[in-house]
Image (tube, rainbow, N blue to C red; front, top):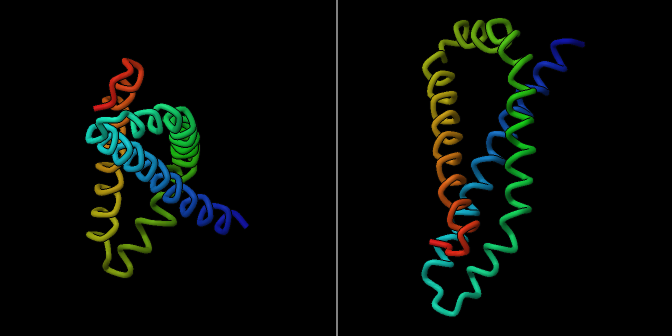
Length: 123
């Protein structure tokens, strides 16, 4: 039963990471649209959507942190050892590097866009 719970946790941890990255990408797209919209309608949309997007990102981030605890504890048993047996360690490493880079890039986007939204001047 523990194995099933850990495997599901690892999958949901990856989903949470994807949600965080996708929410940042959506905020970025809205921010870019606001920068090109002279009438301000896109800026209004960004300002309206921003609080909900922040909520989604925060939930995903909490999910990543909490789901990362058992994932870290059981990492060698459920991820590293199977990757070694199958000869896919490079793929596992690349996956985690890309996901980490996506979270860092998304966090930077959130900080920059958040500052502009709070200042009332998207892009």
